[in-house]
Image (tube, rainbow, N blue to C red; front, side, top):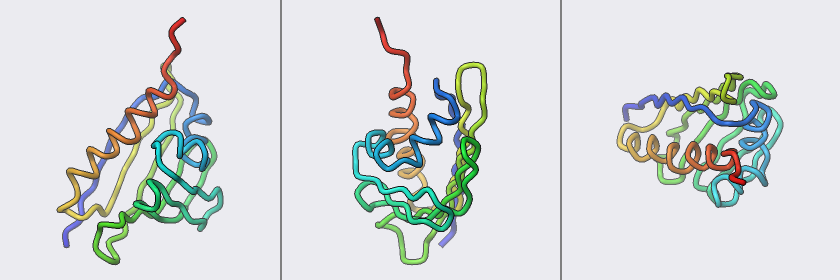
Length: 133
């Protein structure tokens, strides 16, 4: 089955440290997505989000700079593993997050692409949006 790549870049009004921690801390990740997450902070450690819908493991962790993980959705074919990479960079308005998702099965590409926008990037921006007085 052919695999596709998703590339997305967003700016979040927070520091790279805050964004890194939100993705890698189980409680913060759960709050972000609204569903249970279990995130290891160690290379080769297991990850799980959306109550087990997405599972994987950490491949590379550079605090406040980069996270690389394997990623497999429960409705994907057996062995259809993918790799997600988050790269964090300080910019004037906060953090530029450059995201790449490699190896997405072709027939899931549109749903997964939209899912990152709806269930990660929009809530992440909202989580760190300046509070009104």
